[in-house]
Amino acid sequence: MNYEFFMSLIIYTLVYGLNYSLIALGFTLVFGVSKLLNLLYGSLYMSAAYMIYLFNTLLHLNLGFSIVFSLLSTVVIGLAFFIFYARFARDQMSFLISMFLSALLLQYVYSYFFGGQSGLAIAGPLPSSSLSLAGVSVPESFVATSLISLVLISALWVWIEKSGYGKEVRAAANDPEVAQAFGIDTMKIAIVIFIISTLLIALASVLLVPSSVVTPTMWLDPFVSAFAVSIVAGLGRFKWVIPAAFILSFSQLLVQLSLPYNLSDIVGFLIMIGVLIAKPSGLGG
Image (spheres, rainbow, N blue to C red):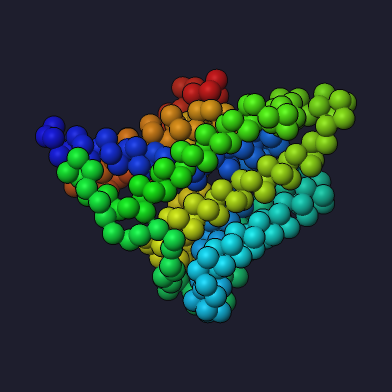
């Protein structure tokens, strides 16, 4: 293992690991509080990207306003589906299926209104140039996103662990029936956490998508990444998201840098299967 290979592996593991953490954080939070898999999650990532294209490229609004409007629009879209199905779905399975079908519905809606499978470019708030870290070229947007991820995760951890409202969130997550008996509005907490979750995945889209393109099927990759990290961490185990993201990013990069073929996605699925078989509760126990 030469120096360049080793440094590329370490630096990109850190960068991608923190980016994976930002993508997976909201998914883990929702399950931790409501015990529901948010199968709409990846399509919210896609929605934020299309909303930026709508406001900035088609309506010619300032990029800053476009980002704010895209975040708010994504929250409205996600919250509308969540509240509707939480109110009218007869059971948990109906809720899950309805959310997944809504993700597919959004895929076809965006495909119809924005031009099928053609990739669309959107502007981003971060620089598109690269910088050198220990001799390794890394996009500045990836580095900035990883630092933002670290700040957001730390802030959320402090909020959930130290604030009074965070104690109510933990109570609702641990035992919703007892929490309700003590006067805690568990539905309101679930909605607040869903809004935070949607803002996190929308922000990840704002930061990461400009380095690629916007397509109607782009929701699959962030959804699989969020699901994989959450499985490895343990569903709902907020504290274990970053270690799980590092394990996943390290394994994928090791294979990607070592083999002539890109099998990183297969590695992610194999890790998920291995964790489910060997330790179904994940790293968090």
